[in-house]
Length: 118
Picture 1 (tube, rainbow, N blue to C red):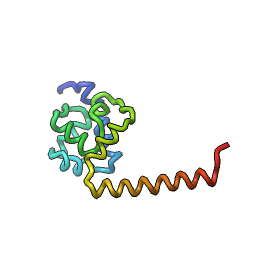
Picture 2: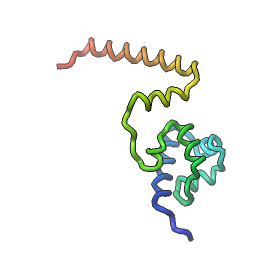
Picture 3: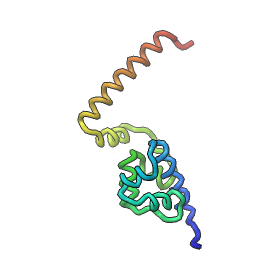
Picture 4: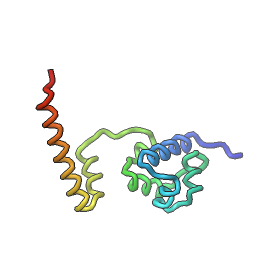
């Protein structure tokens, strides 16, 4: 039996984590990544390594950074990071997000007025 590489096991755990966070089954994510469910299972268990093309598709599909998938690091929030994510949305999706953001800001402002900090 071939020994698992530690890097594949670590990446596999992160693949499973982001899949579960996205609320996807292995079957659905495999379909989105254009791979078999068995291959995805092998990736998540770390028995095989992920190809660059599958890694890129995974990151684009689930809106995660390559840094996180490979290294487990979370990038510092920055305007360019947010711009990159927003650029992947359609104009309609951006409009919806803009409306949601405005509503959220109104709620935050209203809650601060109701319970001022000490």
